[in-house]
Amino acid sequence: MKKFSLLFSAVLLCAQVKAQDSLAIRKMYDEALVNGQCYDNLRYLCKNIGQRISGSANAQKAVDWSKKLMDGYGFDKVYLQEVMVPHWVRGAKEEAAIIDGKTRIPVPIVALGMSIATPKEGITANVIEVKSIKELEGLGENVVKGKIVFFNRAFDPRFIETGMAYGTAGDQRFMGPAVAAKLGAAGVIVRSLTEIIDDYPHTGATLAAPGSKMIPAAAISTKAANKLSTMLKLRKFPAAKFYFKQNCELLPDVKSYNVIGEITGSENPNKFIIVGGHLDSWDLAEGAHDDGTGVMQSVEVLRIFKAVGYKPKNSVRAVFFMNEENGHKGGSKYAELAAQNKEQHIAAIETDEGGFTPRGFSFADVSKDFIKKVNDNFKSILEPYDVDKLTIGGAGTDIEPMKETLPGVVLIGFRPDSQRYFDLHHTAKDVFENVNKRELELGAAGMAAFIYLIDQHGL
Image (cartoon, rainbow, N blue to C red; front, side, top):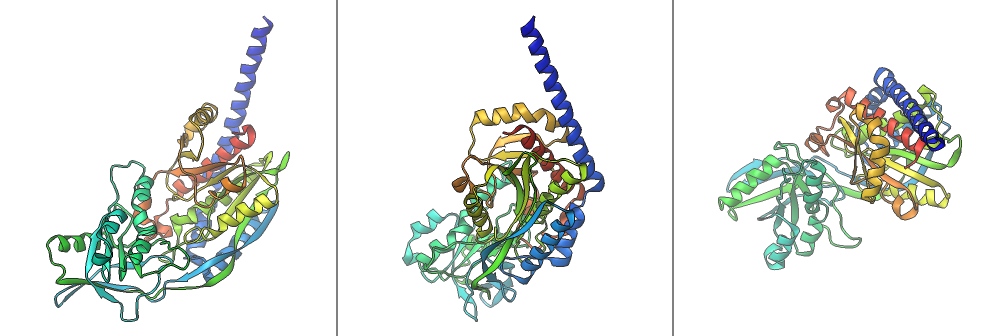
């Protein structure tokens, strides 16, 4: 009888806790959907500041405004974290054309981030089309030298999660130009990393080892890539050639900042749950989905907590990382200083996949048993809000350095619906008008709910 009584008490207590959690989360969703401020904040960031490439005057404007925004919300701590970042500038608009005899067919391109400029007159050369780095290496220097290498591996449409397609196609942009340079290529053009077929080229960073040879590298729109590839298949080359000109430059590193706001924990002030995105963006548009939505959702989580009167047990931080796009310096600096300060991080959530309809969260470097427990504990309470997909997966570039410096931290990625993200990613289309207000607010509420559950019950 005593055993039954204890069991009944435990079940009753569990039901009471779940009811309290449900009520608290409902209040957070109501606050986000009725009084939400992340959409208006995003409008200001996009329309009054605009593109925010690291090292630029606009990046500094974004830092100053973000700190003022957090100060205005009355968080317990608001501060800047100094970090040196690359300063790459695009320069005058790029030019490109397929040259077919006496005919010039203009095509849209954009320089890849961290690339060098072409000579002032541009580059004109024959083209070699390849689908992979391995294929390029197999051709050898004798074939590649003096040519423009055209990486033309398309997104694989079979992936349901489009980030997987981006991951499997991305090496041609990240590493392809460096490999082509070693083989003596004159330049590189890369098919834009997207499934959509249009005339908007997608920029993004390319990598080279310090001190290694660099060559001009640009992204070509998918329509233009198809046109060029068709001409190659029709054996129009080598009679036809490709021309491109770009004016980018890498200047000395400059001082910038991560922006951090905190609600200090009522029980464990030196234990932290963080939520963040990156404040910098590429320079082609306003950086709305990448990653204006992420930083505005992150600060909205803390605003929601204050608005509903929730006092977290552990300290909760919103972190606006600087320089995710072309250097990852902000994330590395945060992890370094957190370790120096002996801060214990429970969990770090990154939102850097756009402000689309929320689906759930993915956990990096965890076991199946861990995921089962997380689902057992949290899935049913998140299910009414359609943010209950809790899976093993990636987390985020900015928080990844923490796994080396902060033992025990659980790295988590916020996962919205992925189907439209790479239509806009790193393009001139990434503007405020392409963000849906309700989807953005639902994402902020979902993260607030999930952080509340972690704060109350741990992982």
